[in-house]
Length: 131
Image (cartoon, rainbow, N blue to C red; front, side, top):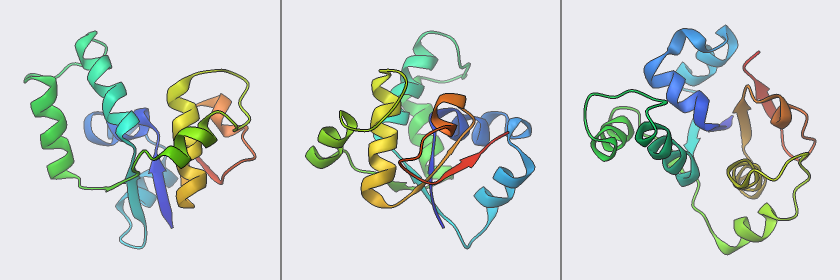
């Protein structure tokens, strides 16, 4: 299965793996699954670190590079097609990051791994719940 990690799932997998549901932890560890990450999640992580909502003991940029080296994933490239679809997906809110994640999952045929209740309700893509 090809899994696109929502930002919080990616961060928790690196910093607080005990926050992941047993099923999600197993899916992330399975060699049968391909893990994907959106540049939007990297951008969101940088903002969270800059605001102090995620604590790291090195620069945000260095932490991101180390995280990507330690746990490499396929990058869900942001394309014009993803950008256009991000405006067309059905969501009950206008969060641009969620729109890009949902559009990326749809374009690349990925299952979105999330605990976000708003995203769990989507019918646009398969979702793996962290609940």
